[in-house]
Amino acid sequence: MERGPAGGDSAGSRAPGVRVARRWLVAGTLAAAILLGVVAVLATRVATGSPAAKAAGAPRPSPTVSASLTVPGIYQRVAPSVVTVQTGHELGSGVIVADSGLILTANHVIAGGGTITVTFADGTTTTAAVAGADPKLDIAELIPAKLPQVVVPATVGGGAGVGAPVVAIGNPLGLTDSVSAGVISGLDRTADTSNGKFSGLIQFDASVNPGSSGGPLLDAHGRVIGIVVSLASPDGADAFAGIGFAVPIGAALGGSGKGPGKGPQI
Image 1 (cartoon, helix red, strand yellow):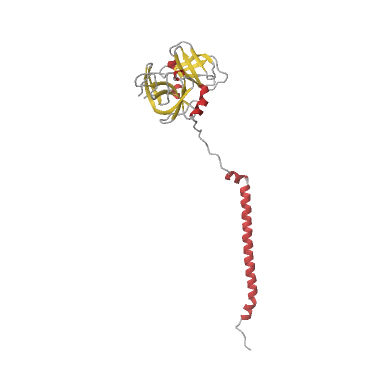
Image 2 (image 1 turned 90 degrees about the vertical axis):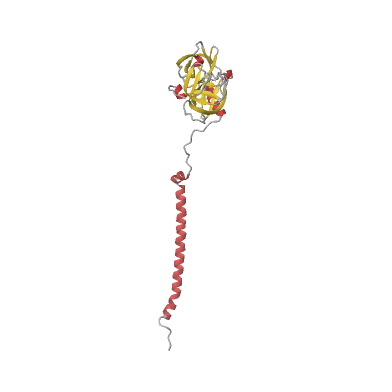
């Protein structure tokens, strides 16, 4: 009797079992993969739903710099702080810088003596006394005898840089609450006026004229960076020719400076 190769029957009998084992292995692998996928999805949902995840994923507000204002915006903010100052035949401007109603103006506006009359933006008119004066800086402080129902002091401070936009508010030629805009043309200028030489001034090109003296020079955020005191004119006439000067607010509140420019005070 012939027999097949040794072990042939044994291998043939195991083949179905091997196939079954492989099927179970594949099925187990697929089940494990599906289970892992479900676990991953659940973990993601739990993580994103937690307060910490929401906080991390939510956009956080970044620190913002105070936005620049438009010229109308600056005017609306500061006009209630600007006053008309008059002594005899001298007409000028001023700006409220404290809750007490303290007013900064140009000294030459009130230096001639006589009764000082102040008119506030709401029409309230009163007399004022000189609280302090610095003829070397052409700056004076006034205390009004009566305050309007609502006192609106301007915000003072801020730096001045060449090329930066500025706004001037005042009463040029008696035209109350006039606003003009320009840029800072130079710093540390000197103006030689009929009342003396004044140094450390801000030079700007916003239009100002007689009656503007004592009014505020404002930066793009509506802050008072200077007090207008004079203008430059090539023929010596009291008319604006593109150059105005202001005392820096730091000096006006107690400081000084140096620098060319020539013209009448306004």
